[in-house]
Image 1 (tube, chains in turn purple, orange):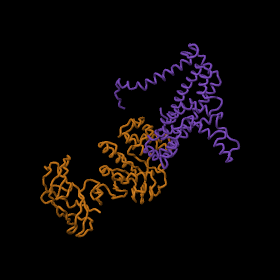
Image 2: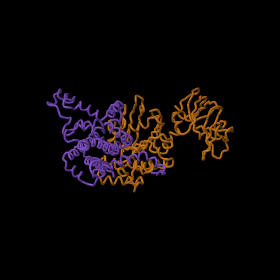
Image 3: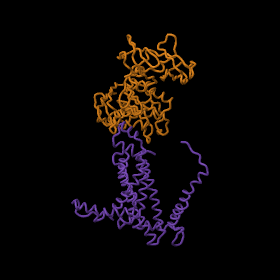
Image 4: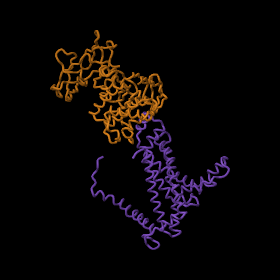
Length: 284
Length: 350
């Protein structure tokens, strides 16, 4: 690869973008971290302490919400991928109705998360459309609890529905960069449908798969709106718990601990998904 | 190794026949080239043989086996693509071993065969490289190694050399030919490059508008074109028509705007009074020497020095002709010179 000459003036161009991130995002992350250890605290006295961290790890509700959000994050990212990948494959191949399907599927992009949540509620609530239909057809005797259910399936369903088009866009561009010749070559060399999928499409689309899984996890893990409408009464999501800790109980330093946990978990999952991707594609 | 038989093959796209009733038999171990301009149906024919397209009519046989409904993965053909189509996420070794893995060949056998293929294509030592780290010529050789390692019944080439520079193209085409002769694999080669086709083929199938114009070995295709398309597409040709004004033994006399000429009739059935189409090559129109037949006097419009010859554009009483002169000849535009057309040069066209 040829290396282009970058002059010092070129770096000036970075200032508006990178400078903003460093100054505002960087400083707020820094303050969150110091606050979680009691330094630069906005409430109480400013002094280094690990009491806030101890308190969070001894607080059952906080721990439950961390695990609950983790579960929702993982299920939503995997779930969206499982729904989006076949659609992306279909759209790549084309065929009749491709444009119509592609635009139909983008509708959720234009609907804010909270509105989406209420839309889905109409479908899956206790007396919602799905339950009424299943009852009418005699498939179930008693309505199913899909909304505010303890497990959080309702939340996962809304996350998947809402983010499908977003993930689809990423996956489609990933799949579009695969040449038809490459697929033909694999078939010509004896690869059946299964081998073409797992030895060609998936490894070649892996960068897109990885990015969409990570972004989906971050969205679902830190989500506030959908969780507060469709989530279970207990445990609250980590974002809800954090809001409550900060504004309801006025414990900003403990909320900062939860904030740091969100950041660390996100970094960890990003790392984990990357290792997983390497494992699947067999590449280092 | 297989014989390949195409029977009355038709492939349509949106009701337009890309391949229109093509029939062809290719012997075991034969190297056959499909030659024609873009859009003539040669690539479609090739991809139908590979199984990427289903024929709308007609049959494809490998030996006695009807292949129409066999998926590409089960046909045991190997295709070399214009883009090479290497798997960008696999190193050279894994690219070459892919077909063997798909065929569930044992590990030791895979190793042996891949190593052989690497050796044969002088790629040893490159097995760990990724395709993106290779030059075009190296990628081409990896693609060839990947194609032959599975010991296919038929090798299919889709303009495999068109992305290489001119020198490498000549070198690789010799390598392909040698490899094919050594392995004796039946090969179908698609190209629009007539030089390539003439150099590499046992037989050439000239295609135009979805149909076969002429089939023959390179010499007969070049020396005895049967249609004006073949005459014009392969090499340079003067394609004219004129009236037969006399006939004696195996010669005919043709009336042209710039004179009367005697030509060997070959198998021509025309009788006096008929108008016939024919062609002759520029290299058969040479400077007149005492005793040469068929004198033509013409004005030189352009004289292009090509090194080994001079390419001439002539005006013979309003008819444009192409001719050749020796490179030492002193000819310049505007000169009037006398040429002669060899009686054996005339090829009568359908």
